[in-house]
Length: 585
Image (cartoon, rainbow, N blue to C red; front, side, top):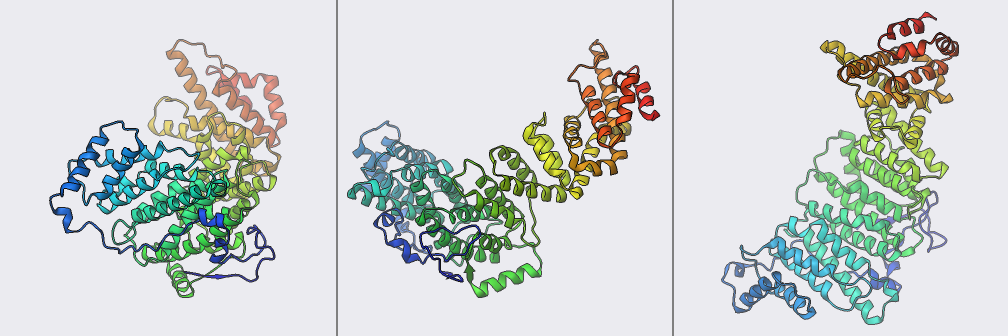
């Protein structure tokens, strides 16, 4: 286990880790003081990954009479709609008596039946051992080498977690019920470890599936549900951090999300949760070093040296949220950085149960990590678009703007293409994001350059193929809407002036192409060549007017209006006259 280290002890041991102040993570013994906590955070006996399987030579022998009777009962139960409690328990107990499953038995149906029994249990109280017996049956099936994809179906795991986490808090239960809750949680922990260690070495793919189902519970609005979830995660990671060997896996795709969720929990007001989260991060750190040293890394000598030094020191310092982010951030790959960033964005929402200041600080610090590399940029842009409207804190929006500017500068083509696809009509959120992207000169130039390319593409393709206009691509239409929003901003006028020639020509080409396509389309359908109020041609001309005003050519707009040039520009039979008027001054 890793050493717990800090510069000074906190003055108030009941205070969570703040986003900006230092504190010492609690020793493990501190969360064993309260009887309530013992009930919620039960710790089962150590489980060894190399424990011999009970499935020995008897698996290949003919079943004895007891086992034969159990098989017959299981088969009969699977085809019935039995509601009697005793018969349900006998079904589960029959599974536990088996040494192996015959080939003819439907394994998926068997697991589905167990899930159904758990699902039917009330979450208002805990009065029986049905949940325990069901999870013991799952453990037994895992030892019979049932395919792990069958036993780790997210729906089965979700049912188990929901049925137990949603029970009332232990301190509200009677003594007998609270003791039963403790035993049930202990059985769940043993089941999770049995699933992860179906073979001699822990299966990281199974661990990922379990964590992906567990992590959403860390954002539950109910304190006792978050506590139970964080307790399970911490215990699993303690076990994984002590392992020296894992089954080979190309990537552990849940690491960034795991660290992000536990980091948010470190700022919880509930002492039990933030203490567990801090301990969990210590175990995750140990696990991560083991994992990174074994997985193929596409990094240079500097990264390999960093791993070597960390393995030697084996120390993990927790002083504040910024410190946690920095420690893990230098080990994250591109996808892990993005997962951590996405967790932070969701944590800043007004509806989040987590501290918005902590989430904002996480986002700020991950963007500060030296040599930061990000993947899945489109996903980040979509997430910002989805959540921006639900983030009202000015400082949080400012941090989102900073993240968007960074993405826009480094990955301008991907950001522009994704944002154009987020909203066909350029809704208010998309309009706000375009304003954010053009609030800094160096990013504005890149964004405008990409939008120019979007406008020029249809005309360029037509010229190369020597074909008549095949239609105005949606992205080109959306690009004009984006430019309309950008040209109305005072902050980017200088950049618009610098890029005016390219913007002017590309927009004029777009108008010409759109006029030609509209005329061709209307001729085929015997329609009148008159632009409607909401037509693409009319809107493109509107954008041209705004461009001219933004670049300081208001007189040209007025001149065209007096000469009827804008109307000439929109009709196919007079379009060339409109172009001549536009170029006259």
